[in-house]
Amino acid sequence: MKSPLWAIPFLASCSSMTADYKSNDTEKGSGIYSITSLYGGGLRSRETTIEFMDIDARNMCNSEYTIIDEKTLPVMNRLGEVRVSRLTWKIKCNSEAEAAPP
Image (tube, rainbow, N blue to C red; front, side, top):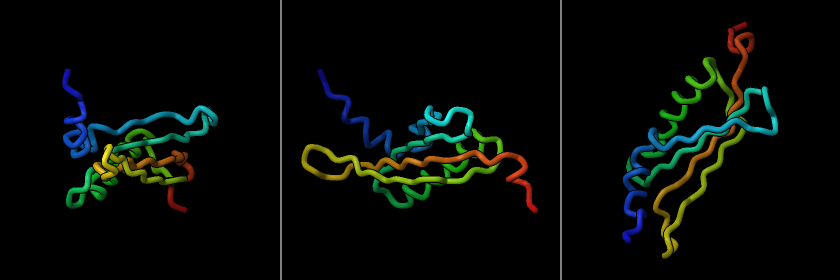
């Protein structure tokens, strides 16, 4: 049986397809979410991932949002080489009143 590890570089290049969203269960109803996506080491890969995550966050919140926390973790293979990185945002959806200019 062949290992599915061959798919990791392909999936890493498709950051918008690998985004993962989840509500922060410890703060129900607070509008706080976690968004995670993988990106590879290609040219502009991180910037492209950030653009897609921004679009996804805006669509999820239906308003502006604030990034509360951002983490980047390398994903290494057995040889200790970084193959992809995982970008995670913890965001808080702004209410309509907060999103409106003063």
